Length: 87
Image (cartoon, rainbow, N blue to C red):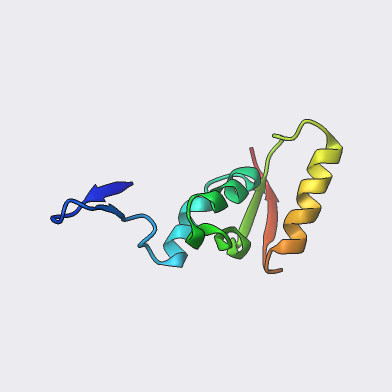
C-alpha cells in the first residue's frame, strides 16, 4: 500500500510496520507465497525466515520439487519454525 504524503512523495506504509506485524500478515500465506514476499523490498528479504508457522499446501507439481523446496526452506529458516499442513 502506497500513500501520498503532504510533500507529494510516495510513502510505503506497509514496510514501515514493525517486524512482528509483518510476520503476522505473511503467516496467512502458504510456504511458497511467503518465500516469494522476499522480492517486495530489501527489508522483506529475510522476514520469512522468522515465521513461527509454515503452511504447506499442494502447490508443487511433483514430490521432487516439493522436497527440494522444503529442504532449501528448512536449511535457510531460523530453526524455530513449526510445520503444519493446511490447505
